[in-house]
Image 1 (cartoon, helix red, strand yellow):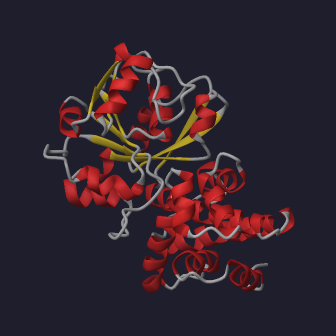
Image 2 (tube, rainbow, N blue to C red; image 1 turned 120 degrees about the vertical axis):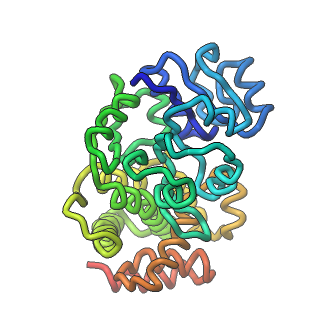
Length: 330
């Protein structure tokens, strides 16, 4: 695409996306909050904190710790900042955003606001919905760095534009599809992290693969019920890779930080201790609180989400709560 592209964020997912975008773009802009990270990146050609096996030609990157400078010189912004920090970062923006395209790679909601990222961008920056897109699908950053075959779904209300945006990410090892199901895919991307926490909990509590399979089967039904309640839409395709595939990989993969977080809670770690030891954000923790808050009004039957909420936020016994949950699944 003949557009100036920027990456916003410096974590593993932002780094993986930068890697594949640079295979299709001669130059990118990159917002990284810490100047010392930029300095080390420039010297070594690697992100010092994440995916250090991925090498970059920094002569093709304009770095800045000033988000407004990056926005001013970019047409397409790929937002890959963990959800707890999105609002804090966006609050620094002084530039008008109405002409920008923003692709959210955030697999979480805006905490406290309990809003999807695309809704927040639309409401607070007046970005037209047809200029907002999301990245969904089973795609761990670590596997992108290893160039293992991966699949991404680009969601945008304008299907043709979604297809165009997909060309930014399509490589020999990344295949892309387009969808107009923005809200459904975005909600599923939030909820799959909650179910990965549940899978991790069950693993530590010594429930076997048979039960976890039932757990994930029920999780898919929960996502379907919840997305239909939030936005009835014929475009929802619960069996597509952007839904089902993402839930499966996040629940089973050794690279899943949400599964790891759940395992630690199941082993007896407190939430704070697990977060400190991981040193990475488990989006499902924040997603659980947001979906629970929304569901207090919506009243959708999502027992797995409510079980995870009881464990994480009410400090209830994982052993007791999961045992009770087994009676609600089939």
